[in-house]
Amino acid sequence: MIFSRLFGAFSQDIGIDLGTANTLVYVKGKGIIINEPSIVAINKKTDQILAIGNDARKMVGKTPAHIVATKPLSDGVISDFEITEKMLRYFIEKVHREGFNLLPRPRVIIGVPLGITEVERKAVEDAAINAGARKTYLIEETMAASIGAKLPIQDSEGSMICDIGGGTTEIAVISLGGVVVSRSLRIAGTELDENVVDFARSEFNLLIGERTAEDIKIAIGSAIPLKEPLAYIMKGRDLVTGLPKKAKVTDEQVRKALSPSIKTLVSNVKATIEETPPELVADIMEKGIVLSGGGALLRLLNKLISKETGIPVHIADDPLTCVARGCGVVLEDLDALGEILLSPDKREVPV
Image 1 (spheres, rainbow, N blue to C red):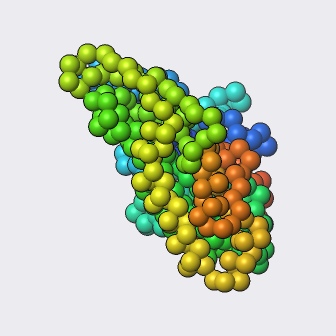
Image 2 (tube, rainbow, N blue to C red):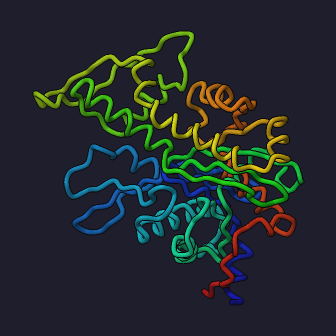
């Protein structure tokens, strides 16, 4: 215990947005210093970790049979415990690489999805402890995103946030430091990428990878028609001949592919508003809905939600980093904001 505190004194407390698509790490006093994909490349023959983060992403879809580039998180929760632990250890050690600390023992705050089960919560806590954390705290991602977006979550006024991540979209109405109404759905960035993959297969008999689908979504994807039409040349394998093939796809075609998922997302936003107490709805009508997460960057999504709900919709400043920045704000003032955390892991880890 004494040694743990001693090592902890030389460690840097960190906040982690442990996302399905990307992991962001906030270091107390420094800000966000790591933003890398949540991908790990493994040699199946030796069980050796070959690459993590950006280096592993370069391998996706390009590896021989014995090397697998895998995502250890699915729908915002841990699907592969051991790989997640190794990924967390890599990020914790990377944070402390520049300083003098042979055995980092930081306090860690991790953002987790709404409605996470006790088993899933314990898996996150155990993975962080095993990866080298001295003490682990968990915070709901919508709460962290709201803090990162500078919403007054501890006031009696209602605030509404829609956090569109890689694996999940989380919609919440927050007041007095707690979630009043919430919804969590499995339609998010990864699902939109799969929509594009399915579209290329059905319309062009073209097989494309996840990375290509994401590039297409970012380059020309939109929720409603654009003033200036856009196009993209997608490349893949012809499913008929098995040979390389390329095809031109327009923003209208991609919008049609994304439409079912976008409609489901919008209907869930409307359903959340319908369940919200009228006094809080009045506050939301005045202040608007805030979008965070990578999905918030889909062109004109805010306009579509505003049109369907009749409520102004704003995109948070730097929406990709809202959860990590929110974790950082809590880290900087644990005494004042500790009450909004989920039940923390009480264990003080001995060295």
